[in-house]
Image 1 (cartoon, helix red, strand yellow):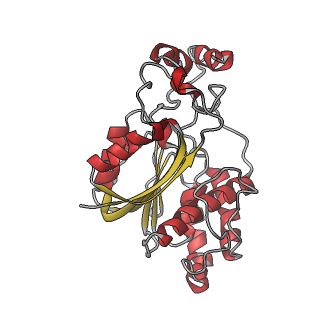
Image 2: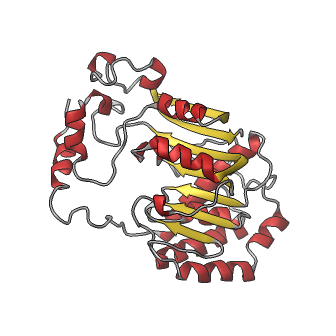
Length: 317
């Protein structure tokens, strides 16, 4: 079944001016801060559980969107530098300052990590949503959120430019291909529901490999669902390439329709060692395999039923 709304959205995207600037949402700084707090701490706790003991000092986030909350949470938990990498400029100075202030309050109070009762279907899932004092001890967090350090970072956020920022703590690049990150300089690269939107995955994984130090970590949550463009979660694999081109229209990005195995193959080819992998399997709300388009009809069954995955991998060499 083909929904008319995705086609209409694709057609409308050809209207001059429709895609000239990103559509910015009204911000709720408290919600944005709690979301970023949850995303960062979930990835950090998961990495710690899987053998990555040190808090990363230099991190990069792919696709932060209109809120830098995840990266700012990393800064407040000990990172010295945060690279925010996006395809188009979304970040807004005053709103990110408000989000930062909310994050400072969350860390100083060592608040519980928002769980799935508050943030539905968010992954990575944790065994405990208590503040991770074993990863971030009280004295360490007090140092990270000191008045002087918070003031310095806050002042830097006010100077953030939507195309490029070259501050000591935060650097923002849109498009991400304009970044000048030095090879083998990053400790951790994180993304949340972003890798499914990148058209040139080979270029993205190559860049991640180049930026990471040996032993550096990538931590990605990837959503393989249709993002509302079909009746069933994997209905986007029933569309022909021609139909999908119509649905995408003239938008700068949509979803790339690449399944789970594509990412595993890139990780293997770039010599990453997977240390953690948790797939979200959904057979109940799936289309029938017979409905798959020619392009996807021979996909492995594990791709067909993998709605999402959290993958953490280390650069081996």
